Length: 349
Image 1 (tube, rainbow, N blue to C red):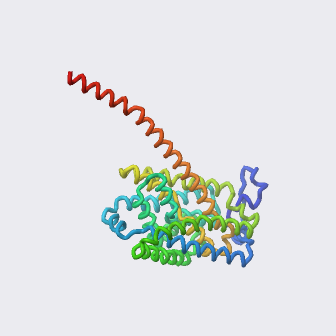
Image 2 (tube, one colour):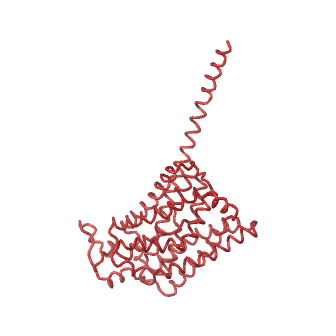
Image 3 (cartoon, one colour):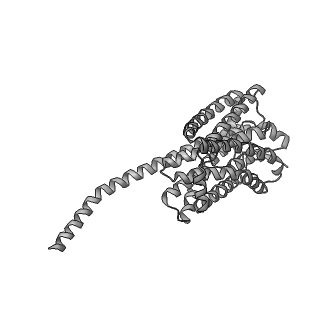
């Protein structure tokens, strides 16, 4: 079967009304093959695995057994949150991949990104939006633990919508990767349970390392693959990177509103739904798919940058709304109090 190749493989076609053309499977694979040297490739792999390990330990350090038990006994909020995470984002990824007519390999990348669990970046964003932090941390925890079963299952289901896509997904490698991330996550839970005084420090260090590693991986890969990195900046992928988190934020808020969660919980579910664990996604793509994935393993980093920018815009809007609402209350409350006092005086007279 023929496949559609990327825009950047033939820039002259951008001006054409039909800018896609067909290639064989072998030719398609060659488009994505990385030009990175073996030494650089190994360095990036080691860096990504090491940083993912540290990040998952720090994520585990945010999980408290007592709070998890409390939400298990009253699972409404968690159930809605998990439904949003594993219902909205995979379906959104599938619909966007279909809408932009992505080729086989690129569709797999977008689907894996959509099926990934939430990351601990969402906890920071939920805090900035004055969300329910217990729900945020628990939702991240549950989505991470459930990823072991849900991620392969969802990939299998949605891959049915693409011809011959099943053969492109290394399910065994993905499951092994997910099992491996549960080990450091479990270690973090144990640290928080037995040595809670170290948990906050480890979490801060983990988040700092995560941010720096994203920059380091981006620089190393840019040096290694050169101009091939433009693949992830193709218009279809950029459009998907903009739309996916935005749809996640919107529908996460709408669904939680339909189930009548309070405002803090709605904001939390919105952030948890739209934010994906981009580091996990990049590591799975880099480790499970070599060498045919090429620079496409950087797509989650582009996605993560845009999901962060959109979240920051929402935070600014929320803060502005709070400030103006507070000013309105301060303006009108004295007047209301004065009217009440007048009515009281007239009633007394």
